[in-house]
Amino acid sequence: MTDETLKILIAMAGYILIIIGIGVYFSKRSRKSTEDYFLGGRSLGPWVTAMSAEASDMSGWLLMGLPGVAYWCGLADAFWTAVGLAVGTYINWLIVAKRLRSYSIVSGDAITVPDFLSNRFHEKKKIILSISALFILIFFTVYAASCFVTCGKLFGTLFGFSYHSMMIAGAIFVLVYTFLGGFLAESASDFMQSIVMIIALLSVLIIGTANVGGFGAVLDNAKAIPGFLSLNSIATPVVTDGVQQAANGVPLFGEAGNYGLLTIISTLSWGLGYFGMPQVLLRFMAIRKGSELKRSRRIATSWCVISLISAVFIGLLGRAMFPANEALNTSSQAENVFIVLSQTLFPPLIAGLVMAGILAATISSSDSYLLIAASAFSKNLYAGVFKKSASDKQVMLVSRIILVIIAIIGVIIAWDENSVIFKVVSFAWAGFGATFGPAIIFSLFWKRMNRTGAIAGMLTGGVMVFVWKLLLKPLGGVFSIYELFPAFILSCAAIVIFSLLTKEPSKEIQQEFDKAKASC
Picture (cartoon, rainbow, N blue to C red):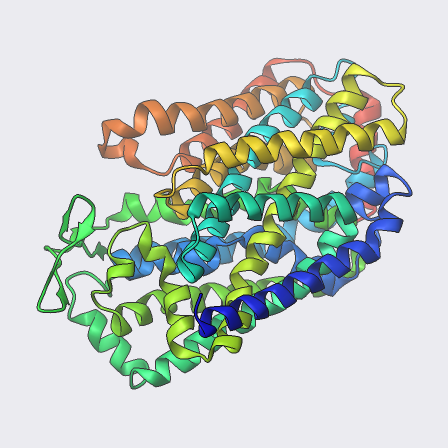
């Protein structure tokens, strides 16, 4: 290991120690009860609510996946994804946040998303609870795997260590950290990590742009590549066995590919995912006062827009600085562009701190994913279905056992070092958006929705993500659309149809709906 890489490692190790310190600080409080461990006792302030929600949501794909897409094939795919996410963020905070916080208290003081959906329809047989917990386990395991891929790529690229050993080490660290502090530690560290993430993005963007001669130089380079700077076409790298070819140091591109209206709609539909993201919805439920959500919305939206714009432009900047870099010549390796830029632009210690932004994004997301998935099983299935007399200590023990199992499965999924983070995340994102998004929206705003409609909608959305991705998408044409969009629409349709064809909710449920609405 060289002196430079040692300094980078020291800077990142210092950051990790700070994160561990936060976990230790909050560990005592997290052991008081499952409500404190899983929801922090509904004590989050507006800044922590907003920033931790965004940090836990964005994950490593913001600093690696999104810049990698922009570097590899140009502006269109990354831009329309960013637009969809920014709009989805704002609308979710605007219409869902306050109503969900109010309704989660009215409906039996629910502390998890499955709890809320089950309580909303006064379930006796916990079918909604079981379906919710099952899909959370499936999709968050995939999501956690994407974070482990990020760890493997980050440390493998930086220090030349084995991808597999670094991926496993990252999984172990996140697992131990989640054991320590629970939701409060996760939220407090996510707040700090959101600051690290945005500083890292802006630092690389500003210094890198100045280094290549300004914003105009980046755009001029992009314009020279067919389709690279267009919003309705896409660059097509010339590849052999997945590796981009170059001639005299100049990367080769074919004719620009078409990026039509259907593809734009498909990419914008990323924004639909927000309505079903448990890690974001939990922050809505955990804020101490509903009146503070307006401030949180402004903070969250501002952070999201700035971060997304920076991440997309970093991909374009990377192509200007490294047009044909051997470390970036496959679609998977392109996701290392932020790392390569940081190593080039900054002294080792500063580069280590900047790249701690990637580590911050990964930790802040993976601890959320593991905690929510564990709570789905221990709180909702184990204590809610299998052993209703379970004590808090038993629930916590089961939760930690499940954390280990999820982490092991996540490591198995992440074992392929050629995994593309963006693709892994997109599948899990679609799963949550289609399974929970329509169910949450309709349960908050449509009094006529009933339990049958909720079950039909969740099953339709969750199953259709798999059907569309694995069976229909390979057919191409109209079926190539991102699976979230059709699954979300079909889930909405199933909720409406099955609710109208079956008995309307009881008067008690409808009165509870009115009470939640009035308390907003």
